[in-house]
Amino acid sequence: MSSLSLEQLTRQMAAYRADFPILAQVVRPNVPLVYLDNAATTQKPLAVLRAVEDYYTHMNANVHRGVHAFSEKATAAYEAARDAVRDFIGAASSREIIFTRNATEAINLVAYAWGLANLRQGDHILVSEMEHHANIVPWQIVAQRTGAQVLPIPITEEGQIDQAAYQQLLSSGRVRMVALAHVSNVLGTINPIAELIGMAHAAEALVMVDGAQSAPHMPIDVRALDADFFAFSGHKLCAPTGIGVLYGKRALLEAMPPFLGGGSMIDRVSFTKTTYADLPQRFEAGTPNISGAIGLGAAIAYLRQIGLEAIHAHEQTLIQRTMAGLAEIEGVRMYGPSADQRAGLVAFTIQGVHAHDLAAGLDQAGIAVRAGHHCAMPLHEKFGIAASTRVSFYFYNTVEEADHFVRTVAAVKRFFAR
Ligand code: 7TS
Image (cartoon, rainbow, N blue to C red; front, top):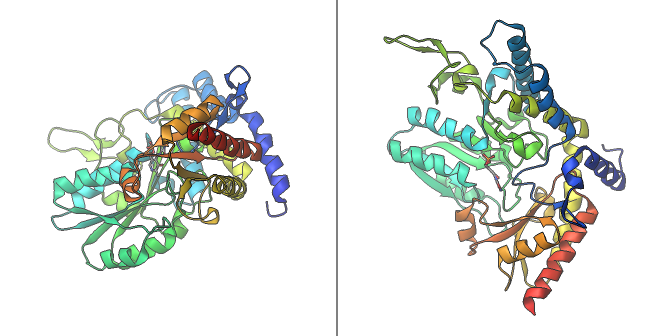
């Protein structure tokens, strides 16, 4: 990648658009789709669509049960997807990879299975003010059940974790778990997660990293980060919906009681004593999303061939250009750090224009963005706003789309300012 100029990179990325049939759709006659809502979910390339179709066409059977040929084929494909995830995030063993429905379920799994067994009255759970509700609410539920307390880690005006305040909270000696987003879905902030994990470990706390917005956009190495748990969703990285991943350090997962009970997760069942299966099956009760896992494996292969560093570099081009463009529009306020410290998304408000009106105006031009609180109400409250409009890129977005977006924002603003 380093041998490519930015211009070559831009051209190369645009070529991948041909792999995504949906990107050639129109919203209305003569209004092409400009899809800039990638933090919500991403589009799926033919390689993923075909992997799912191939599974149902050629090998559909339940996994880990049958002795028949197709069950073995399906099991091999399902487990190959697990190995692909292990390599993708640098885990030591595929046993540390648990398939879930999404990042939300992965976080809930840890909150319930680890939290109910380990949290006591007076323990502290830290969550940053920039967390998505998925990394706040499960901890609140489990805190209520155990008597533990959820405390917010403040963020600065620039949208970074306030490290002095974080250190202060850790120094109580009561913190057992720190729940942190790797990348914020509103501020775009890329948190210095290895450093923040090191601080937690020095205080003998574990860290749950919410990687929903990082895993799709940059290389991840859970061992280099020393993350205890790491969660992400397949659908935000070109895989189908309904498949997600929980990574956990083996010793931690092995010490955790099950989350859901049922088939597949047991060793022996009797009415006197039931014992549980080894990892990862212990945390995969019931028939899993087999086609989703296979689709995720295909998505990972596709992204790795593009290169996660190249993806990040291209998104940097798009976000720098977009933020520079938005800054020219009077009344625009952007939230979060400068472009070079963030992933490819920005949430903003325009004085006198409601976030939803702006999104509706953009939709008229075929541009898909999200408006609202983006499942981060405490963060919006912190900045004194009820809603923002968010544009979020992926590698298949082009410079032309970014420019079209900025021009259309300016036009919608002029319309409402009349
Ligand atoms: N964590 C973060 C940081 C997220 O951005 C999201 C989804 C989740 C967790 C939950 O992911 P899920 O796949 O389990 O739903 N964020 C968004 C968003 O920003 N707009 O739509 C979904």
